[in-house]
Length: 117
Image (cartoon, rainbow, N blue to C red; front, side, top):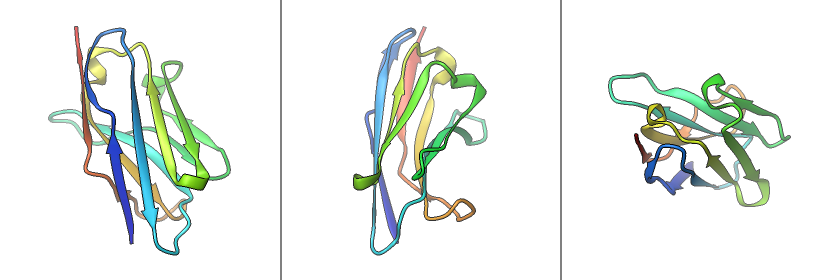
């Protein structure tokens, strides 16, 4: 069983920054992939960024150059630094942790990010 807990959401003006944190706790499982997804009202959940324990990183086109994902493998913790935020970045952001590349994700409870214009 893997537990995932996010923190760091909030309200920010357009052009501002926020940093999200996520910690995954597991008992006997190694966490291979950790990443961030988001879901805006009426929309499907979409990938924002993810990283593997080996350092491979993948970003959605909409956030490239503005968001940076980083990870502390020893702590099973992943961060999302979000800069130059736009109103369209407003969503609930979910952290996901997977034990393998093709394994189903364990989800956190989500954290609200609201960007005002």
